[in-house]
Structures are given as structure tokens and as C-alpha cells.
Length: 202
Image (cartoon, rainbow, N blue to C red):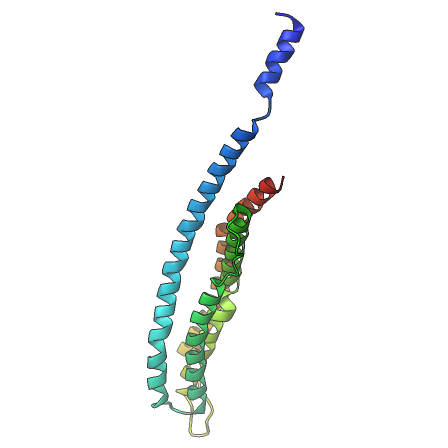
């Protein structure tokens, strides 16, 4: 075999994929991405249904307890809990609200998916501030309000101190775990969407 024949043979073996092969590969990648985002959407839907149901069911409980409040501090705590149970469903539903373009192109689909993923990632990263902290604050005020003396000063026994320290550690731990989970669960998918957008832009 001559040198020129070897060169031709080698070039045929390492030649770049044709446009048709590239489109098939891209279509497969998009289908896989759609499956992953669809699975994630179902998981988010189940989570939101559970969280919203619990929040709405707790509102009547806190309202009922208002009639038996031990004082102003406990009343404020119960109002904080009621407001938190109203805000949590709002926050969850708002994160799913996407301004979708009228076009149904693949690029627009990917942009919408990216926005949805980024919203859910941000929601998870900040869960300690909009979800856990208001509830924790309400619980502190309610429990402190139940331990007031005749002068209106709360008295905290060692058991309650331990409970409050545990709650603080829980808030900190949950914040860290959710940030880690957001990075692990959503960042790779966002990167995949970005990669597909770059491929379509070429």
C-alpha cells in the first residue's frame, strides 16, 4: 500500500461526523435532557404538593391557638407562623412561574428549562431563610410566651435552652445540606442545558 493510500484511509477513519450524524446525536441528547427534566418536574410537583398541603393545614391550627394565647409574645409568634404558612406556598408557586416565549423552538425550550432549573436551585439554596427561619422564630416566640412570669419576663429552663440550641444547629445544618444538594442536583443539569444551547448556536 502506498503512502498516499494510507493517508486517505486514515483521513476516512478520523473524519468528522456528517451534519446528519451530528443532528441525530444532538436530538438524542435533547431527548435525554427532556426525560431528566420531566422526572425532576414530577419530583418538584410532589414536593410542592406536600409542603403546600402541610402549610395550609397548619394555618387553622395556629388561628385556633390565637384564641388561647398566653400573652402578646405568644400572639406575635402565632401570627409569624400564620404568615410563614401563607408565604411558603407563595414562594414555592412563584419559583415555578416562568415567562415562556411564544415561540416553540428548541432554543426557547432550553432557555425555559434553564430558567426553571435556576429558580429551583435558588429556592433550595435559600430554604433556611424563607422557610425554616420564620417557622423557627415563630416557635421561639410561642414557647417563650408560654414561660412568662408575673412581670412578663420569660424564664428559660435548661431543657428549653437545649431545644433552642438544637433548632439553631438544625437551621445551620439544613442550610448547608440544601446548598450542597442544590449544587449536586441542579448545577450539572444547568451545565447540560448550557452545552446544548452552545451546540445549537454553532
